[in-house]
Length: 571
Ligand code: NOJ
Image 1 (cartoon, protein in one colour):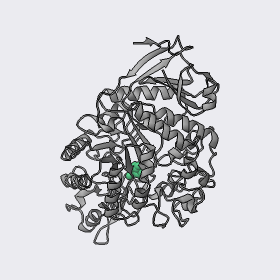
Image 2 (spheres, rainbow, N blue to C red):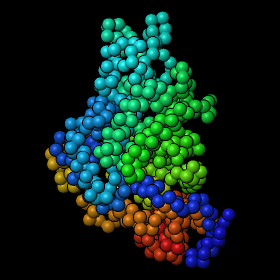
Image 3 (cartoon, rainbow, N blue to C red):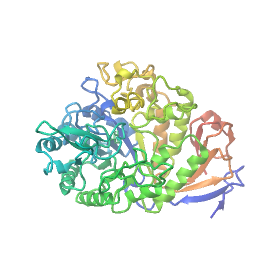
Image 4 (cartoon, rainbow, N blue to C red):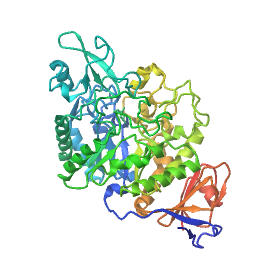
């Protein structure tokens, strides 16, 4: 069905509105929320030891409330040896001394509550740290014991059990199995770890593992969290018999095995776990949520994670992975909305997080990087910083006009790029070590935030110490500089978030505006707001409508939308 555009947009008389997504009738907060990801180690360091901490987050929460976010999601702050940035948990129900105490956590939640901001935390159910008491008990107890049954132990293949039980590869490189020494001192069984060898996978076929995680959920729900971002929510159950896998380690099917279900990912029984958890959430008041971090493609399969009796949201990595290409962007927006609409769940949108190259850097890579991996190093072709920043501002503004939930990653509101020239000696991501430097890893997007241009460590703390080095010029991107500059990335984000709320865009509708400005220009209407983003090389003409927000106000005044610019107009 198409409608001709109302004459309110002169010059656009031939354009047609093509409906894709109706306004959301549900009123739950998470259907249209903006959730801001805090990576605690790099947010703000109040005790000056070079590592961020919970009191640092509490002290700066008012900035996030001012920005206009509905909730913060905290990446792991639990007791951990930090072999995978805290995604290796040694105690799920306590705070690592590096970050503070449980009392600091309670103070953070209380402060957030007083500011009207919800707190979501990270749940890491696929694996724990090899330092976890349960894993230590499993090592001590020997083969066949109930302690071993908490994890996935198997005898090896080969005459003396010297070969791993199957061919699975770790997501971080190298084999997904490690052999242990038995309490007798003999070479013994192998355990599976889809990530680092310090991250043993739990055995989700064991009801005791289910009980343990329900206990953990209730522990944090009683402390007032609004929900959980669920790590690797596609991997908990492994196929019976643990068969070999010939596709990619991340489970994405290859051309030789199209649509193949990897034995370690997306097993049908996984959904029963989320049904159980949904019932646990229902024991508590308020609208508490689960958000899946599930690398499942295509989107039509991912919708199985957000059926009404399971999770509330799932990250939309298909959107995050879309390059600077109008046709592909239009296609992923449309298929996302249609797919999630088909199960009554909100679509989510995300451009950056702690696992990927920040979008201000990604969009500045004009020459495809030699390394396909997850980070950029000094040996790689370097991004065009100015282009990346322009495109990132436009892309963020477009995202903030889309109906559904938005996830922001700390520092993107400052337009921060990745640190792409970091000295390799500082790298901590296990990917770098496990691939002997073949994959650079994710440290570049985890650099401590700049708060004050003139302060030590750009205001990350008062001592100047920083667990990862900050790149040159970091201070010029600091929050205090941007807060005083109406043309800054921060000012743009703040205005976009304010208008998004005021105009109800998160719960709004989406109609394409076709035939208006050429194929390289994305144009859609949400709640009477025309959003246009020019992804082509030539400027396009703008209709004579009231400008609400623009990445380039001078161009907007001349009714032009230049390359890599975005605008919101009132119809
Ligand atoms: C996804 C997390 O986002 C990532 O940082 C982590 O390394 C893996 N899951 C393993 O927990």
